[in-house]
Length: 580
Image (cartoon, rainbow, N blue to C red):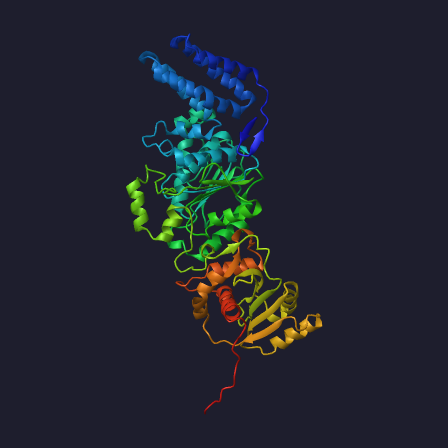
């Protein structure tokens, strides 16, 4: 059996060509034959690979890579000077053959004539990424690869080579490549075109010899089409994240490469939201059929960037699991690769780009938030986001000994942009309160009365504190509805009149929120729900930056101050004698 990732295929019976190929390998291993005689067997091996290729392209190329190439490497090393060049020519031909369907062999072959080797000097960290792209190409169940590395480690370089390789696999493949910068995407396009016009490329994909280094029918920097390609418009479509992809289609892959413009956008919530919304509404729909795959590469600038949002989405569909590689996680349709600059022992993972002393200096001189995100691929809350997910205590499964009732606060809407926030927790009897349910909605109060009553009844809410500075009729109205529903005197409703500024209340209760309230874990919170919107509002609140919305953290602060700390013993309004 052959196992490709988690995709298992039954190996077919050996073909005649494969059986004979194995016999030839035995001859090449034999110590009885002279090296000069083995040259003849090398020619036979190459010819047999071509026959085997007609039956099974991938098996023939992998057989060449794993069995013939190591043998030829030894023969080159051990041969006499007069035979070395002949053995090396077979070695080169074998590599070119394997590169037809093996992506790693393709990279290595394309680097032979390059003065600067990238992959061969960074194999340890890039190999999982290369293997993932090989599987993405051939495993129909694998749809997403998300790879994040520190800057300059070679993630875009590998994606460019994978794109070129795809056009060797078939001139009918099409790719859309996106990035934040026009300079970047046009540079990727030029590099791919350069590979397709090279002699090394036509050594691997001999069809390109017919093009005589001019393989393009339509040629622009951003869009181009290979001669005789069966694609609607272009084989490669290069766009910035703000460019239009309307009417464009990709049948092989859509590649998202560095969608965030560096540190200047790391804390831009609107930018991350814009990119994610375009993914959901525009870019995902540019795929042409189920065969199209998605590749996300870049640096993780923040928990809210596109890489992390896609990881969260795929994890909710099917939980991502650890693998034998500490930097790789996967599920049935997704592979996630996150390679840090420094490993768990503080050693550099890429000494060619970041020698140990340089890596340590970067750690010492870089803002901790940026170092964790950019270099460690472990995004944390930016400065001032004290209630980011990483700073909250969370649970997946609630304890079995929680109280049978809930307690809640409700912050009513006063302006059109405000959310009604009904923050509902279940206490454990030891001072901890587990976020249980919520209403978090931008709707007029009158449209939510019935839902509020249902929450009180279904969650068995025994105490409800309402911050209500404008509508003195709300408490009796709710009590009347509860009486009509047969829930009379089972929920104590207390109105709170407060003149405190929200920012002050949130700041004063931050420690209590972090210590006393146990929030639902991010993995079980769905974004388009009341709790999802509530948690999004809470975790994005910053003490250092202006906030458009603060209803979520204010509700948590109010729950801590008025229920946990105040135990519902609240101040009551009193008349004040005015002096004119």
